[in-house]
Image (tube, rainbow, N blue to C red; front, side, top):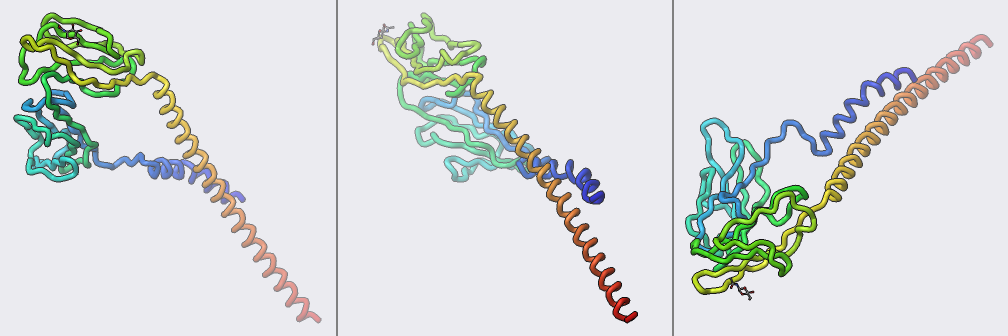
Length: 259
Ligand SMILES: *[C@@H]1O[C@H](CO)[C@@H](O)[C@H](O)[C@H]1NC(C)=O
């Protein structure tokens, strides 16, 4: 039993480490590349220009970058992909990869046709973040008397078009947003964009999930260690009983010889 206990002590940290590693926390993994948009809007109007940049690690002397648009490779091979005049066909999912990074998560780009477009950096925000909105006009034509609206109600009015910032957003800022204004004498409105501000509730849920994972790993580690301990003790008992039997056989043959 002593052998079982000491090997259990040695195995426990190793087992927990192995379980954590197999749970996805690999140390030597390559970093994941990231696609960044410049300017940061994930929705643009036709004929806007936009640059996609690939943030990743490169081997020395090798700047080759692979770009995927809707899953197909495109000819661009440098770290930035410049779209001079966006077309609707440029919409979709972009991913990139460099020599020393794994394939990035997809970034969505939407190319819209219209006079006005309400631009945001993302559609899902966390509470406390700043929501940055831009009432963007086609070919940057001047817009006057601009109103930003949420769920049909005016939130902010600018005589001359300006960006609208909502600092320290709360879940009350979730809703359907659009902007309207005058381009020349034309009263125009953008399409609506749904913005979601996630409360701290979802952060609590992800923390709970993490604790569940850690507890699971620890329980598995302890079970594994106990299992190993049991294995050694059973093996030792088996060996002892086999030795006993041998002794008994030996004793028995001695008895037979004496007779
Ligand atoms: C544009 O039209 C809406 C109604 O559709 C109106 O409420 C708004 O005042 C008009 N905007 C301007 C700047 O005239």
